[in-house]
Length: 239
Image (cartoon, rainbow, N blue to C red):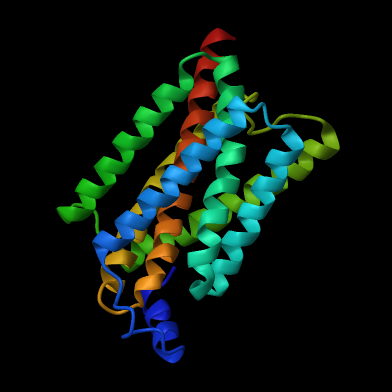
């Protein structure tokens, strides 16, 4: 989510000027709206006992919306709510499943996620952690590595019937991968904050939806990894 690229796209498309430019406060507001939609969708999916198939369709719609918005940022104002609702549908069932296995894990994960977000914001605001080129390179390589690993293990599990790196895998390796994923997802917030700050006053105001969606995607990723890590830790202590 490169802010310079977004600003260039905005200028070339003639988007800047008439409707104002992106602001940090405006982006925070869009993030809040999308987060509310996601939470409402998550509670709704649990309350209505949403079938797994529909939740899967919601997740697919979220994935399509996200990647279309990444390549066509000006559509984010329309696609980001779809992304938030779709992710919420799957997150509701995911959280309910984790809660049935270990009661109380979801609340702990929520507190941990909020604390993590606050810590990353404080670290960024004080300059303790900066979005340097070295950090960006590390996160890019780590993110791609985790994506390839998860996809490869998913295929392997389908073929062999095993549960490698899933919440049912309580091995040291699985726990280690989850810890690494939590760290990487947390540091991605630094890049999100930096992108918003760099885009302020440059990109069109409509791009606030784009950056708000990016922030939500990172927070959701962090939450999922924290829940997964806690379930694995609880499972390993009971083995």
